[in-house]
Image (cartoon, rainbow, N blue to C red):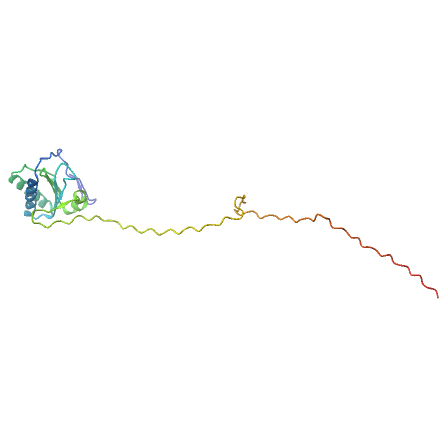
Length: 214
């Protein structure tokens, strides 16, 4: 199983065969859950979380996630779960990913245990997949808080200002020129209907005044 720590990519343990659900009543599931949690605590598992998955899948009823700080500890945690379940009289669990040690799956039929190192657990974050319904690890333990999903605050939309109504131009409906403005009306100078009479200057004939003889 290849691992590249620089790119934070780890291949998840491959399932060897399709899991077959073994029907168990509620009391047996709770008993098996208590045995698994106790066996993880015996080897100092970190951040144990239990999730009820009955409404999410028909293959198993619980998912338990726990962390080990090294390959040696994760392998010891998986072995502790396997041995405790078998000694309690339940069917022998199947283990996958034990060779690598970064992510080990212990299939206890009605309960699936994921033992992961912190970096791998943070990267894959199985809590987002199975964590809708967390339950108590065992009887008497405090009830876990429901997961809080981040909700992005929506910024209130600014109220739109009503657009100012434009008054219709006086020349609405009339063709406009290239500039978009109505063409200026050319006012032709009105010619008077009656042509102006030319008044000829009357010449007053000079009266000849005869010189009176004395």
